[in-house]
Length: 99
Image (cartoon, rainbow, N blue to C red; front, side):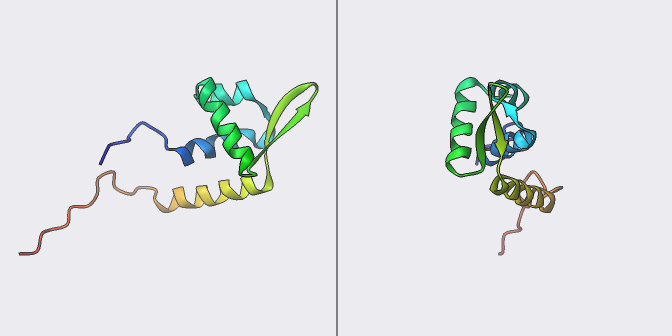
């Protein structure tokens, strides 16, 4: 099993993008605040839009992204899951072998 102590998973990145977008934010601002490359932000914005979690809007001539109701629901569930596993050991517990 590989160790992922410093890397975020796909779901965590999606949650970060949705969290940033709750106030309506430009692509570049999301990219920098979520610490993603240009290719990554394009991928995640597309994935979230296809799934109905994020919508693109025009505000003062600029494209902004906003979290939808479904996206806010996703964030609530994600937060609940994160709270449930908070403090969970980094290593899997060692189970004694039965003789």
